Length: 483
Image 1 (tube, rainbow, N blue to C red):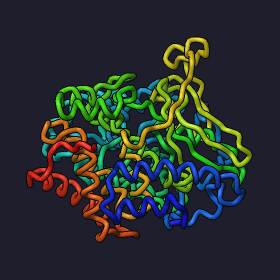
Image 2 (image 1 turned 180 degrees about the vertical axis):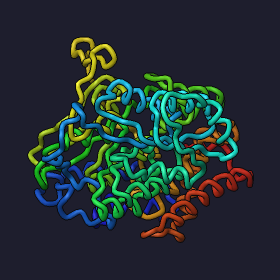
Image 3 (image 1 turned 180 degrees about the horizontal axis):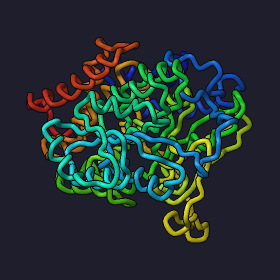
C-alpha cells in the first residue's frame, strides 16, 4: 500500500487489537489530512502513481466507448445470456428485453428451482439453451413447456449447465444476476469466451477481484456494472481523458439508523434489542429484502461498494469517499483533476443501470410511462452529510479489507453475510455483527493470499462463514456495547 497516514492506520486495524471506536476516531483525522494532499497534481490522480493495487482495473480512471459500435435496432440485436432469470435482477432484465425486443435477444437462461416462472420465461423469450439447478427437475420443466410455440431449448443442469449458458457461442453479453460465489465459475467462463459481463453479482469483484480483474484485462472483456452507484460512476466517466479522474464519491441513503444516534442505539441494545432488530430491517426509503436492508442499516453495502469501486476503476482508497444523501437522487459522483464534480441523477430505479450495461455504449430511448423522467421541482431539496464511522464501523473495516487485498475482501463480505443471517435469526445482537466480522478478519490475516486462485477464493469464503458460526456457537459473544 502507498505509505500514507491512512494506509498505516488501516493496516494497524488488522494487526492490532485497537478498538473499533479508536480506529474510527483515527480515521476521521487521517481522512481530513488525506484530503489536503489531494491538491497535489500527481498524487491526486486515481490512475497515476497508484501502487496499492497489484491487480489492475477494469476501467482505469476512464471509460472509452468503441467508435465502431453499430446502433441497436433495425436488425442489429445484442444477444444476451442471463444467469438467475427468476430473481429480481433477472426479471427486470427480461422486462427490458421485452420492452426493447428489437434491440435485445435472450439466447440462454439459467435459474434455480422456480420452474413455473422459468417455464413462462421460456415460452415468452424462446431461448436456445436453459439450465436449472437440479437435474431431477428436467422432466418437470419439459412437461411445463410442452407444446410451446417454437423449438424446445436445450436443457442442462447444475454448475456445468450454468457455465454453458454463460459462454454460449451466440451470446454477446452475459448478465450475472445470481447471488454468491456460485456466480464466479460461470463469470470466468464467460470472460474466457470473450463475453462482456453485465455485472450484478457483487462477489465477482469483492471476493473474486484479484482473479477476475486481471483475467478480464487479459481477454479484453468489458465489466459493465449493473448496480446504481457504480453505474453512476461509469456514466460520469464516459469521455474522460487519461489522468482526469481525481476522486470517487459514493452516495448512501444512510439506512434505517441515519436519524438515530449511536447513544440511542447503544441504549436499545441494552434495554430494547427487539427495537434494533425491527429497525435494522426497515428501510426509510424502500421495501427491500431483510438482508439488503440490514446491510444498508450497518452501511456494509457502502463498505463493499468502496472495494468494488477500487477494482472497477483502479482508484486509490484515499480517493474514494462516502457521503450520506437521504433523498437518493444523486446515485454517485466523480471529481476531476480540475475540481469539477460530475453527478448522475435520476429517480431510484434499478432498471436504468441494468439497461445501460446491456445497451452500452449507446442510450436507448424509453417510454415516459414506464420510465418516469426526473422532475426537479418535484424532487425538492438535496441534502448531504458525513457518515459517522463510530456508528458505522463497517466503513473502517471495509477500507482495511480493501487495503489488505487478496482474499481479505472476500472474507470481509462472507463474514458479513454469515453474521447478518445470525442476526436475522436472533442468535446475535446488532453490534455483534461488527464483532464477528472483525474477528474473522483478524483470524484471517496470517492466512491472507494476495494472488488467489478461484479455488482459494471459494475456500476462504466458506472458511469465513464457518468461522463466524463457530464464534457464535462457542458462546463467546454477547451483545457488543462500545462505551
